[in-house]
Length: 591
Ligand code: ARG
Image (tube, protein in one colour):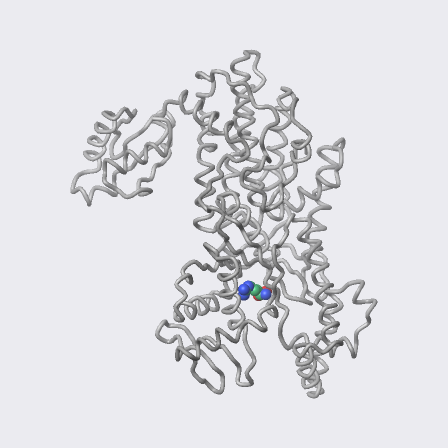
């Protein structure tokens, strides 16, 4: 029996369980076996003591050729490690960089609404989390044969832009704003509110300017476009560092002319009710407050735009799934929107999912540049890169192109840290933790990758790699490249040698086991929309490689041992690089 999956399937067959129901554990002591199946939960169903169930199961399993042994309430399994090693390595080598890829998605679209920043507001650390989760999901879905559609649903509509125009006309200094747009715009916006306390007419003026934006007035439009350009210019610096490209920057205002049909449909179907002059969809039956569709003055709302956007996305991309990577504060909003779509008979509402996440706080805020009480992401990133640079200067002063390395390590540390826990958990960010090269961090994984590269380089296992590989060795392919992209593929394929028992030790076995698990981990990450599963996988395989590296001499004098270990090192490197790519990190060859 060669794989965990094969054991599970056999168990499910014998026990009459549905696929995926049998779960295996790892025995505390490897001497007992490679996997264990606990029978305790079955006792009730079969009205039998767990040890009796285990004994019977072990017998049946042995009959079908498995190495299975009962021990108390467990059945322990032992894999044929020689055959397992051969299978796993060959599967990896055959697939190369497409190892773990699948055609499950059949090219169907998965809309990923993420980052979705607000115009004229600073990109703060909270928006970072949606940005990195969404980006990772795009890469994960692409790997599974879907076509991710990255959408930045800009917050570019609302009376605040009227206020901003008034503020700019009264207190703005064009040059100062050009110099430092987000901070300066925020300053004048705050000033507007202070002044409006004293002078109520400012609010009317702001409303008037907002109406002018809507009516397409030239001056209003051009000021608004200027705010938008400056905001996008600033956030694009962040996206560049993260290697992110959106397919669409379609903001809320894009739906200005697309809401009428859905409002009409709601009215036709008798779902719109008047509530204090506002038009709402009553959701009391579903234990939710009403969903606001139109204000008393006829103005549309955030939800109205999301209804129009959902329908637009379905009509435009015919998505298999439509995801919204937005903080948990908007849980209710998305529940309402999905419910309203269901009520107007959009059966595809079931394919929409709010990928919710918890809060981000900055543990040592004092370390970050604080201007006007917001922690700007550009500053956080700059700081991360500086710190990474200091570490690199100390650890590898001779490294070529330290700048690039520092950017990849520093930014990677932030990304990895952000994806290091279940997305629903609140997290607090700490520099010391994120940039620790020995802790459970991005730099640790990147460093491990570089270590594997250096072993392979010493063995001259990269000698024939072509120029394309050189360019890509530490570089991500663009987002929408086919899942069969060649990143991580080793330039020269390793010689097919007989592995024999050379990889049967516990450390090699652990690595092989992880390599075998990788495709399943990618699928699970997509099923749960949880990049953290890949982050944890990257850490596990990095740790397992380091253990292997310290316990065994890869460059053994015996050629067959050396070759087997190098093949395992090459496969590990490829899988680790791909795992890192899936969460949005570069895997540097040298560090
Ligand atoms: N701009 C919003 C915010 O910063 C997030 C928008 C999320 N996407 C959506 N389709 N509602 O809170």
